[in-house]
Image (cartoon, rainbow, N blue to C red; front, side, top):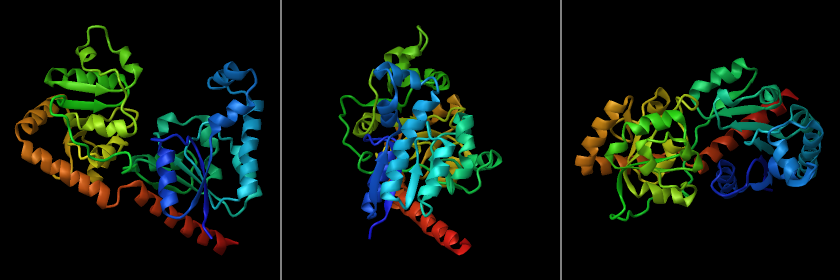
Length: 346
């Protein structure tokens, strides 16, 4: 009999939740979703205005009613694993009641952000989780000091259905490409490279760049999500990966997505990156803008080593344990170990 995982998060394609859902289905699990935002839409009063208000102001009666929908699903399906990825709106008391309704259900939190993005309610939920996974090894200690018990490192990965090599159109290839939303630190780094034939793919927040910024002509006006990510990678000889203060030291999603597309990644150097990749073999790194410019100049002139590193990084990520199918297998091994430990303690 197949096991069941209930994923709390956004079921839309190209989300982290969807990538894990696909992996668990391939591994023979039944996958059910509960989307907190949809539940709030059903319970918020005042229609669309009420729902929008609930995104900015906590209205506890509405959140309690929304959480009741999660309790009903748990009572009906009795999942083997409740995997919370979208933690916004998840009440500690609701998690406590789930342990009463379905005692055998393991409750895991796969937290994709840094400790900076934790709020009081998320921290209060920590004791209710049987395991919390962080996306950076550097964040494990911080989560433990905030009260989490069983904290393990589970990095992001490549979704090989979305992220795969595409043939470039040689007429539209730029020297450098960056895929991601606007942040001030990113703007400052990219301005130092704007004269090197740079293209930026990202959402409308890039309109925030200063009026006279050289990046105005670099922004394509388009985001690159899902399969569009791979298309954007194919349009650049070198793909940049910048670690800002919120996400440092990574590895972030692009650390795996770029190699999966066989892009040549020039990534900001961090200890967490170098724990996984070998600089000069499966990745190339920089620390300062001057170093980035030097390496860009070198690899633009030397296509063979650029292609060799891109191919090696693709092989490393897709065939040596860094896809979401691999991450799903790791999660299942933890589930089996935690279930066995729980049975021994009864």
